[in-house]
Length: 399
Image 1 (cartoon, rainbow, N blue to C red):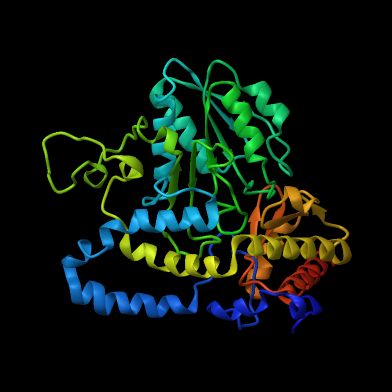
Image 2: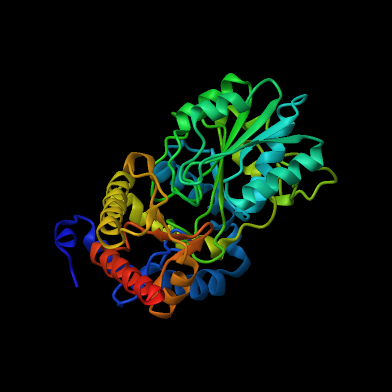
C-alpha cells in the first residue's frame, strides 16, 4: 500500500535501504532502536573476514585506534553542527553522562546545585542524583508539564549563583518537546553554570548547531535515529573552549597522553581524546558509519523535513481516527521532535495487543502510546496502517 504522500516524498526510495522495510510490519519504535541498513551486513562480514580475520592486531595501527575520533568528527559535521576535534565515540550513554556531569561540577568549584527537570530521561536523573550524592551537592528539580518541557521562565527561576550544572534533553523522551537549546543555554550561562544536553532523541533526526549555540557538553546514543544497532556506543561533545581544562573521572589507558607508554601515572590526552577511557568498541561503530554515509548523502535538513511531515501526518490521522485519544506531544511541529505520544487509559493494553499484530510502538506512563517515526525508513502508508490498527484495537478493548 502506497499513499499519495509517499508518491510525492523525495526521500521515499531510501526506505528500500533498510532491512525489513519491505515487510507488512509497522515499526513505530525507530526512536528506540533503528532498523539496520542492508549494506551493514556486508560491512560486518568484510570486517570479520578481512580486517579482524586478516589483519588481526595490526588493525589497531591501521585505523581502529583512530575510529572514535574519525567517526566523531563525521558525526559532528553531518548531524551536530560541531567542528572537528570536539566529538568522540565510546562507552554507553550512561557512562558518558557520568563522565560529563562529574567533569562539569568539578569545573565549577564552590557551586552546590545541579538543575534537572523531573521529566528528564530516568538515566539522566539517576546519574545526576548519584553525582550529587558523590560530590556533596544537591539537586534543584524543575517540575514540568509532561506533554511539554522546560521553559525559559522555569530555567531562569531555577538557576543562580549556586548552580554548577544544568542537565536538559534536546527532545523530551516522553512528549517529544523540542527545547530551544540556544535560549536555555544562554540562561544557564548567565547564571555562570555549564549545560549538558542529552541528544539521544534528536541525533540523526533533528539538526543541531552545537558550536553556534554555545553548547558546553552533549551526549547522545547511536542506536536510535543513527541506526548503530543494539548497544552501539554513545558519543560525547565537549566545546573546544573547555577541552584543555575539563577533567573526566574514569582515567583509563586509552585517554592517556601516550596509551602505549604504560607509565606509572595518568596524564590526560590533549583534546577530545581525553574523554575516552577503555578500548574503543570497533565492531559497535561499524553500522554507525553506514548510517552517517547515508545521512551525508541525504542531508540532515531533508531528514528533518521528512520527520516533520511524518509527525504532522500522524497528528492529523490521530485527530481523524482517534478522537477519544489525547495528543500528549506539542501540536506545533516547530516544538516537536521525531515522535508523537497519544494518551488513553487503555494504552498499556493497546500496546501489548499491537505487538501481537506486528504493529510495534512503545508505551510510556502515564497512558502513553509513543509513535517513533524514523524518517528514512518509515512510509506515510505505514503510519496510516498503524494508526488504523490502533483504532481497531481500542474498539476491540472497549466493546
